Image (tube, rainbow, N blue to C red):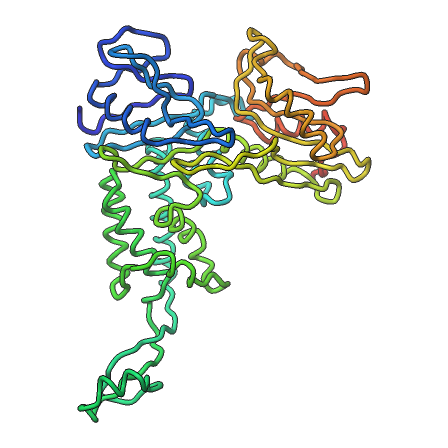
Amino acid sequence: MAKKDRFRIYESQFFTIEGSSKRDGALPIPEELFDSLEKFSLEKRMPDPRGINSHILEPEGTGKERVLKAGGYVGAMVFKDGTQIEILPMLQSKDKKGNVVSRKRVFLNMLASMKFIPLTRQIVNSRAAENLNIFESFILSFVNEVQGIVRNGIKQAYTPFVNNENFLKGKVVYAKHATKNFAHKDKFFVEYDVFTINRAENRLIKSTLKYLHDITSSARTRNRIDSLVANFDGVDYSTNYIQDFSSSVLDRSMAGYYNALKWVEIFLLGRNVSITKGRDVSYAVVFPTAQLFDSYTSFNLLKMLDNQRFRAELLTKRYPMINHTMRKDSAQALAVMTYRETGMRVVFDSKWQGLSEQNENFGIRETDVYDLYNLLEIYHADSVCYIYPLTREMAEENREISFKNEDGILGRVCFVDIGDMEGSLENVIKHIFGENVLKQEK
């Protein structure tokens, strides 16, 4: 297996073994890497609410004709020899100015819309993030946050200190004093507060820097981490991540720590993001693409709505995480919007699926049609709007797919260009509720 090779595929493409038959959408990789990747994919189950186990890469075929197909999950895997595997979203798009938006940029924009991932626009728009795998972009973002903490001054706090001293200070811990100093009348077992940088927040940050130093594949990032760790001299490494995190304080004086501790929660506690490793894999970080698209849709949808005109209800959807079971749920939606002036109530849900007029019913899943009726009943809504990403096959202007009965339209399929999400959603909202529903420009 070659050192530090990097292989990138997009959703619906697949890996094959070098020397096997050539197929459209295939990326050949060395057999040794293929075997390791296949084993890792089989070990890491991604259970969904239907009770079905899927995988980061789905294995198909037998013998030398085996393939590992991408679909439903995006992210990065880094092997212990430095080899990198990257899976990116299927769609490439254009922004408002008509410039092509790369799939990596689409991925970063989607991630930045997720509340629990504190990616800044500086990182998202940087050339470095375009070139690094997504986990390295996370590391870079954390390092930048810690750099800001060091630049503005590492925060200190009064912390209890307990020790057997030659002087009397603070309060005597009598239970300890009696046993420790029975024969040493010149000593005092005392507890008092010291003003120190050795506080829970700094211990967590220093521990995270050490963890990331050991796994980053970027020499430049490793050097930056070394420089930062030197500033935390006098800070212990955390021995209990959960306890230190629960005792962390994020008041106004600690505002500069907020994003750094969000990264700590991801890296050290493994919350919200599927980060895992394997026998040959240093780390893997993956996301269900549906979760990213849902987050990106709701983020842009709510950003443009006037709260005085709409009542918005965000709904909690559940997404697969590696080797985590999920309880079954009834039909889930993304949000419910009620236009106050008319009382019109619409359920919104986004579907990360490329539709095509070449497919029967454009490729809309039968289960989504059934769910439409469930959503209408569950949320007492007037209609449902399914939001799909715009594809070349569905790029004809003014296309609308609707579900009707004798009473009118029950649901619509609307398309959004992920390169110009805000503009696309603006058109969707105006189409459903009317031209004047959006907040006025100042």
